[in-house]
Amino acid sequence: MAYIELTEKNFSETIENNDIVVIDFWAEWCGPCKAFGPVFEKVANEVSDVVFAKVNTEVEQALAGHFQIRSIPTLMILRENIIVFNQAGALPEDGLKDIVQQVKDLDMEMVRKEIEKQNQEGQE
Image (cartoon, rainbow, N blue to C red; front, side, top):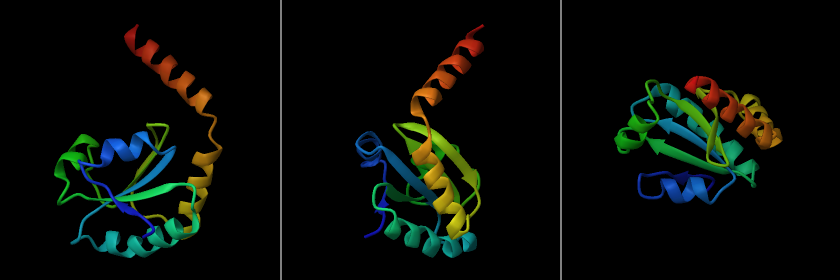
């Protein structure tokens, strides 16, 4: 299987034990979700060093609520347990591959410093 079904039960373990996790928040009744599904699965089959996961928002309402999912499909990418990409709407195959590569190329030390800076500014 190219992707895993992400649930409240396996969420923490999946996020904590994998460097990069690409998550597709979707629902069975959602037309754009159904159209994006094959694209997501094709890229998941081609990219072996990243975990691809799907969250059915109808079944996993607590997860969808935790991440404040308001529109589906929503694509979210976590790297080292930090949300580095969050966008509603489907992407074309090349767009999905490109954003995954951009996440791989991120300087996570720089990302952590920027988060720390923003947190400090928020406290002032």
